[in-house]
Length: 448
Image (cartoon, rainbow, N blue to C red):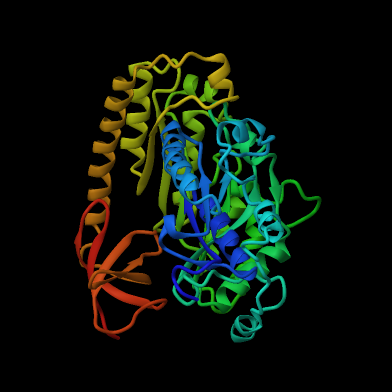
């Protein structure tokens, strides 16, 4: 099939790992009905935007790309344009159809069905089921197993597996419950099957995903929880590393901490946002804990899991946040010393409590100032934390190559580069750390 032939697709993804996992599954589905991936977005017969609306800036980027696609569609009306993800959400697509009439298909998060149906109805695309038996036989996959898209097969070392869809815990600033729907845990057997299928195709590390991942199983009666699920995936021979995100302070249990500590394949890496360091702001955010609760939790995690790396999220400029309240976040970040912090300026999202009932009263320039202060602080802290690794011998799982250097991650999810003429893809390399910065490290191979 030539590059310019019919039956090609391109998916552009914004946002979180859940969106990345959704795009991967959509790509797999499209390939099974006869389409082939192309890197050239404008040349593809089927173009899909998988969208994020967690912040206004992400939504604006989607609108910018839609503007380009409108022109492209006018020039090539036979192209199929699909819009997927949180911009579409669970609601009726009618308002979006009116605004973007050139878009052919609207898909809620995690639901490729509308696009598949549309393609199968189109005569000129002749979307056809292909015989992918050879792929299944090569990897010993069963019908219904997840087949990686061609561009990831044999290349993808670390993969994401959604285990909880949606969220029912409505923080006052968060649009996810409105866009991804209520919390729904996936069947444990299905999740294990996904992990086994990924493993058969060369994946060595899986990250279990949920909006609040440690609430996995809360909607089951007498079903497994996240700790139980980790035990099941730990039994898969060729999976070498397991991670999970994102946790919530209210549902991080001692059982889960003990499980992470006791299972060698589960990495000492926890992502648990605090969002704000002031109790009054936390209450307005409807987070359900206090600063003191959060401090106790971090101490407990560090007590249970040796050498743990903790990541967090912080929002600056939430409605009503005074400079003094912001400094509480600054102090918390400085004192607890996280290995990574995802920092963001507050932006009001439609339908959320904060957008409907609160005034976005922190000026944009002030939000930027606060963000910059946290960024500078966090960069210094991570630089100091990483400096301690110089001279240490660390096992890194190799995910790929950047220019001439192999790229891998430590158990704590820190990025390490090293040089070698040997093929290290998918292998664990023992490296001695020779240099560190706040964002990555350099190492050299250690033999024996």
